[in-house]
Image (cartoon, rainbow, N blue to C red; front, side, top):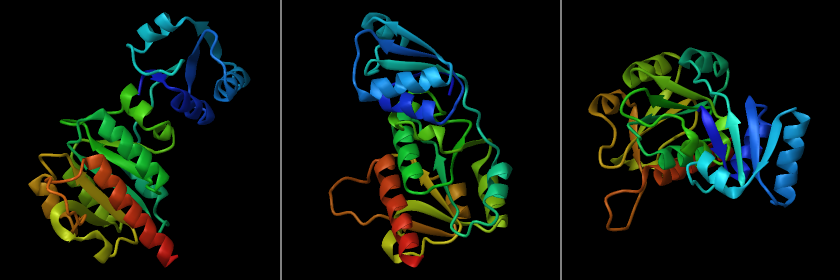
Amino acid sequence: MAGIIFGRQPVLEVLKSKHSINKVYIAQGLKGSIIDTIFRLAREAKIVVQFIDKKRLDQITDRANHQGVAAQVASVAYVELDQILDSLENKKDALLVLLDRVTDPHNLGAIVRSAHQLGADAIIIPKRDACGINETVAKVSAGAIEYLPVIQANNLVQVIEKCKIRGFWVAGAEANGKKCFEQDLTGKLVLALGSEGYGLQKLILEKCDFIVSIPQTGKLDSLNVSCAASVLLYEISRQRLQKS
């Protein structure tokens, strides 16, 4: 993630995370407790704070909903799969979220937010045919991207194989799977989700240990992928809390 982060909560979270920030922009005349906190944290970290007019802030953020605050940040580096797997070696309920061809940054940002809040240890995305981490993802994640490691992989099938060697089960999310609340989702787990319209690729489905679904009664084909991710992540969290 390189460039501009905008929005009060995302900027506040990036300041709290101690991520490298070059400059903070605040709209002239803007007041409030969260603005005071952003200003204080920036000054404590010796980050330049620039008060500018709203038109200039609109230009910097490409007329996004910046809420009067933006920050110029350095790049967020993707992490290596082996690094994450090593760190989770002794964690019995480790959870990775693997996303296959999710191209909408709003969906990716929402998934990152849910994954962080519901206990995932990392997100895995492909380098091609998918959205990467950008300003929109950071904004929608409400700052969660600063806390959740993201792995960008060349080959998702190879990622799954490596995770299995390290003791993970792989659950694919598809409409024809077993009801999620009837499937044991505890232990080391990779939750694999595909994009709307395409679902999971055949090669990935074949590598899954089991398939889970969300019972639905509506007339639409499926839930939005970010909504489906939230439901499944909640069920995983519920089962683990119940078992502990």
